[in-house]
Image (cartoon, rainbow, N blue to C red):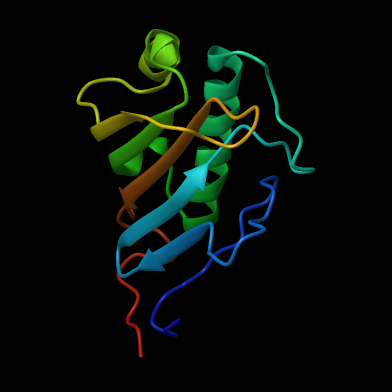
Amino acid sequence: MSERFEHPVPEGVAPPVAPYAAVVVAGETVYVSGQVAFDPDRQVVGEEIRAQTRQTIANLERCLRSAGCGLADITRIGAFVADRADVAGFNEVYAEVFSPPYPARTTVVAGLSDRILVEIEAIAHLPPGSALAGREDG
């Protein structure tokens, strides 16, 4: 991967086991790979959609913080829910965390790994004054 990109390592988030970065900063844009309801030891937190959504959003926030931004800086979310019946519970927690104007969002019902009910990826914009915002890349 190019040296022009930053790859901050979030604390408190299980590192990926597959070949990808959890967070990539390109210019003033932050890309967060899909997060799930893992604790730092890769154990699933929660057995129902609301608990898993809360843990997943907490992991997403940790990833964003590692890059110098937060949930309020998200411009787009991609959400993957394992069961159509869980979309309402997902939306309930989502509405507790995010407020209007909401980020753009796509929600897909998709097959996920064993015991994982939700996965969330995000794109955010670094706020002015962030350590990485406006950095000149070589």
